Image (cartoon, rainbow, N blue to C red; front, side):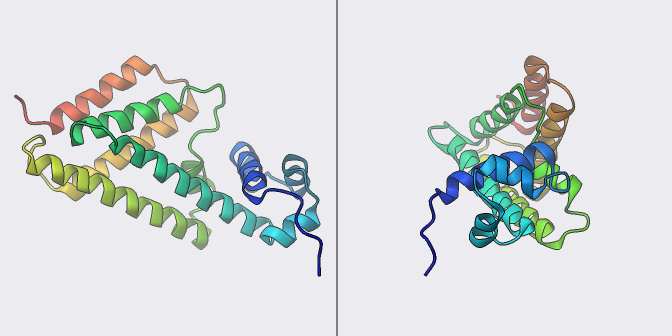
Length: 195
């Protein structure tokens, strides 16, 4: 019988996520993970498996928590248009931190998804959930007469592309919040039926 774990698994997983997010998968060494997580390699391997397994757990955690955060924009909104505005403004605001880490999911899509089936699958699952959520908001807005007619799938994809663009641009340079919000308002203005 082994010794009981002397660490909180979620806490050390969050620390590993931070390292992967800052450095990328390829540039992160096991020594980097040991330092950040505050545990030895043997404990990492025993709790999470190899570096790749740890990375996939961290990515899954990030995607789950991110999706939960996104769904919080649904609470208390007066309608689909307000939900989308809150969501997009929130993404703009998230780019304003002192770090240029960008969106971890977007970083993984660029660094790993082209040649890693497991990463591509995890990101594809997340993209599918986002597509369904956004399509549902579009359909609700169209049914309520708030949004113009059009393909809900196409409009949801446009929104996902806008979200990814905001995240990439925010990693590249500090976004001017007012200008970015004007761009969001312009997009939403074209989506809404004029009063």
